[in-house]
Amino acid sequence: MARYVANRLAQAIMLLVIVSAIGFAILHMAPGGPLSQFAVSGQMTQEDLDRVTKQLGLDRPLPIQYLDWFGRMLKGDWGRSYRDGETVLSVISSHLGATLELMATATIIAVLLGCWIGVLGALRRYSLFDSLATVGAMVALSIPTFWFGLVTIYVFSVKLGWLPAGNRQTIGDGSFLDLLHHLIAPSLVLALVETAMWGRFMRSSMLEVINQDYIRTARAKGMPEWRILTVHALRNALLPMITVAGLQLPTLLGGALVAETVFTWPGMGRLFLDSIGYRDYPVVMGILMFSATMVLIGSLLADILYAVVDPRIRVG
Amino acid sequence: MATAALSTVQLAPGQAAWRRFRRHRLALAGAVTILVLVLGSVFGPYLLPFDDTYIDIMKRFAPPLSGAHILGTDELGRDVLARLMMGARVSLSIGFVAMVIAMAAGIVVGAFAGFYGGVVGAVLMRLVDAVLCFPTIFLLLALAALTEPGPVITTVLIAATAWMSVARVVEAQMRSLREREFAVAALAFGSSNLRIMFRELVPNAIAPIVVAATLNIANAILLESYLSFLGYGIQPPAASLGNMLNNAQIYLTSAPWLAIAPGVVITLAVTSFNFLGDGLRDALDPRMNIP
Image (cartoon, rainbow over all chains, first blue to last red; front, side, top):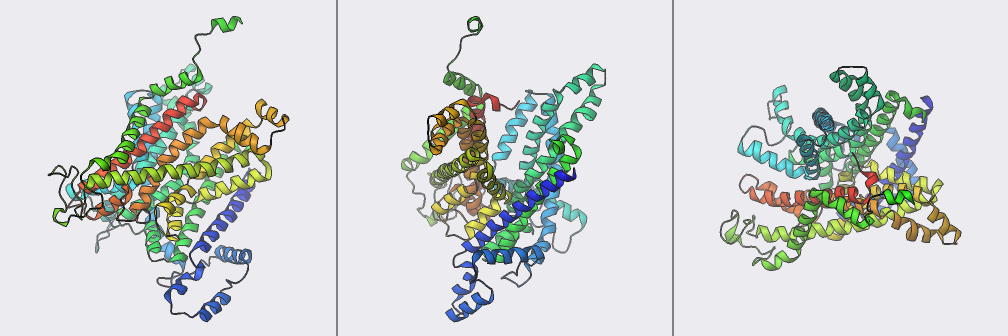
């Protein structure tokens, strides 16, 4: 086990280095390089620019600059926002809570609903329910999240007036019920795609399990069907879902960005989009690296957790 | 020879594939829908009396089915159906071209990684893993922020965020195909590595490649709509399915029809390509059939 974890950790660190190199390359793709902001303003002479370039060490060879930048990233020095001079990490962390709240709610909905649909579909394979669920999942995966959000706002906020059209809370309110009320629409919209994915994976995982020998053995023993399903089948079918959870993090983060934009939710995705609008490159780069690191750590944790619950992985 | 006599009538592989594909009614429906969308976006604009960018300020916000405008007009009095057709033309073209670029890049990377394996393969596939760490929309927006928006850039950027899955598919195929007899025979003939890779191995992996290409178009159309909706894709006055929805968001309460049509067309197009890809997977490669 320790060897597996060490191995997987080494892979993740190597991946982090490549990810950071890509991030650094993108940063240097900015027209005019990292100093474009000052060059465009016209208030700085070429001499000033040269001096700043030297001061910030931008005249050094790129590999050296990269090592320096990567070292500072590791130490938690991610630079400062052009907009208000706040450190990038504090800007991100002040928006992270709202995003995590949205993502966690959507995930809970998606896991419960998706697993239920998937299990039922597998048990009643090719039934009307199964066919509808399969087609429905495909359509759900094809609907643009932002459009689904707009339709939701139109139906439930504009026409029916049941749900607020956006924001995290009513100004001046902010009670638990108020927060919950605002959370419903964006988390359901975000959960749509996730539910479809969980349903599909759960269905195939369950189908694989219920055809195994030990299920037949359990039946032959005369074990009651509900016990076979819950204790034997479901428990084993749920194991691969740990990997699915890790795999879904990128889609979940991307979906959150879109849902936050449509529902004016004050999270990291909206901050990202706003920062792009303001050409606030340090924050843009910070969030890009932060989200990639989140995905990296997520898949690492998923792999380790899977090895913990399934011994075949760590031996093989 | 006795076993041959016992076996039932053998269908040619192509015939068998067509039979399996036809059984997949949704895939067939998808193919028909795609055909309609393509024909509509190619020839539709010539059949309409309105130009997609013609502004008629006197006829703003005409609801659908009122007078000459079948789907109504938008905030500048432009005909929604004309914009929808031109928008679909732009979105479908971008989806198709982005797919071609992504496939080319993915096939080359996957072929080299799978054929050579070892250090080359490891480095290339770790690069694929690394790019996959970035959530697509974040990467796409960051790249779009650093470039001048336009149809060409949008296409290239979408391709740049979509080639990795293809590379993975092709790499896995190459790794198993290079051990097969025909590959070994080609090597014994003295064929060059490049020739073996692209004339022998890649054509033998055509089934999963075609499936990946179909699903890739679906993904590319979806990404274009996201990017344009968020304001970093196709810029007005040119229409795309995504940027039509960007405008529609503002007038959601007063003119909801502006939001309906483009969304329905995007969903139709993406769903159709996804179903088509699913059907092709069942038809071309029965081994990949998921129960």
